[in-house]
Amino acid sequence: MKKIYRAAFLVTALALAACSNNPGSYAGGGSGANGSDSAASVSDPTSPAYFQQTIGDRVFFTVDQSAVDAEAQAVLRAQADWLLSNSEYTITIEGHADEQGTREYNLALGARRANAVREYLTSLGVSADRLQTVSYGKERPAELCSAESCYSMNRRAVSVLNNANF
Amino acid sequence: MFRFLIFTLFSINAALAQAAPLRIEIKNGVIEPLPFAAPTFVAENSAANDLAQDLVNVVSQDLVGTGLFRQIPQSAFISTVTSFASPIQYADWKAINAQALLTGAVGTDGKTVTVKFRVYDVFANQELGAGLKFSGSQDGWRRIAHKVADVVYSRITGESGYFDSRVVYVAESGNKGQRRKRLAIMDYDGANVKYLTGSDDIVLAPRFSPTGDRVLYTSYETGHPRIYVMDVGSATRRVLQNAPGTMSFAPRFAPDGNTIVYSLEQGGNTDIHLMNLASGQSRRLTNDASIETAPSFSPDGSQIVFESDRSGSQQLYIMSADGGAAKRISFGDGRYGTPVWSPRGDMIAFTKQSKGRFHIGVMRTDGSEERLLTASFLDEGPTWSPNGRVIMFTRETQGVTGAANLYSVDISGRNLKPVPTASGGSDPAWSPLGK
View (cartoon, rainbow over the protein chains, first blue to last red):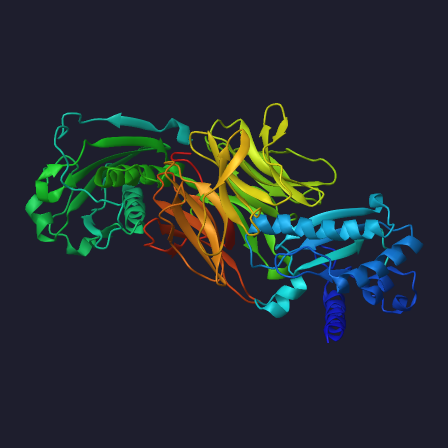
């Protein structure tokens, strides 16, 4: 059920990216999406689009927590495998929180989440030099409603490929 | 231009010795606002005609805006005031139940404006305090009006005012998912807005220096949250902390204006650090695996209140300004964050989350006498008026179209109202008085 929902979300993200006149207008990322509009390259397992869409560029957290659960571990193992065989890429892990918290606390919580992902990827052999983190706190929600269905998508860490040529 | 304001006592002999019977006690909250009359100031030359009305309007708005005063409409007046020097017809003002009367005169000379004014206790048949005169640039006429209102407020309440003050905040625009944010500064009442940054990079939580000349804030200019200090007059800025692999945020000045506290995140862990602005040297104040953030100094500089989740949830703690052991002060039901020490030193304002709602509240510095002043989907980030009687904060509405705006409330929980801003706004910080 969750997988289906996530797939639906990715399609939505792609549609939004395709509609946007200037998808890269926000400096330094923060949108939580990698901004690809090249559907063809998804089938190429060495492509950034494959990393983003087939493997999944993000993992989710429970309220106030930064623990990487079993579902997140599976995504991160696949991310780590991909990064190990595509060594030209570095990533920035963006940590985010839902809007139900104060601004400062959510910045700190987003940093905790990004760092939890970084540590997990490092434990799987990805070199720490290739992994940057940044926290957006509650500043860049991926979903905008004020309900758990959106909050659960916003409590996330997104692995953004830095030198991807989409 | 405000630097050249002149403060003159011109009728020292007037009613100095009288104890004032006209008095509002703010402490307990005022249910019935005090009625006052403010006739259009007398224009001493024709060029001052418009200013004579504008000034009295702003003074009246300041007073009415506190919730403590009610303005009697000019249409109800029996007396007219055509000369600043003429004796007051007390009976005419008593007849319309004006308990306080403000009279004034305005003259212009080139680019300078001079305002004289007197405050009367109508039912005591006497002037309240002495007449005063303020001069300044015509461009700064609103500020002169705020200074007049501060004197009136102070004479009637016995407390210092807060109208001659500014607010630095984050002006917000655009969709919730890609909100654009830039630093802005304005008069406390929303006038004279000036933008201090562009909106290319996220900026957060500006804080005034004790002298109001500088602002600390957090910006994503480098791609990572970093603390900056900006000179308000020139809008020039300088990054204060830029070590790779770290994030810095939540800065606030110490009362000495040379030291700041802030949060530094390294390897996912956030602690509180102290920095000397001149040397750039930092020192760690907390060393815990938990999140320590939102530090705020006591007005005497000896202590710091902050939030931590070391107990398992966000709570408020006080430690010495040198660090060391911290004492928990919040014990109620829910989560507590963003503590801010009051300028009087006696209270701490905070954000509280409980049962899915957000509140702005105040408590004594030992955690006793907690009172919640507001309740909504999302209220956060209190800042104190310079006299410690009003709190401004961010209120955000829910849903896809949710937007943030500034609100204020007095510490009795009365007079909750939006603060006018051109677009949305968040993270307000109130300046000291007269800055």
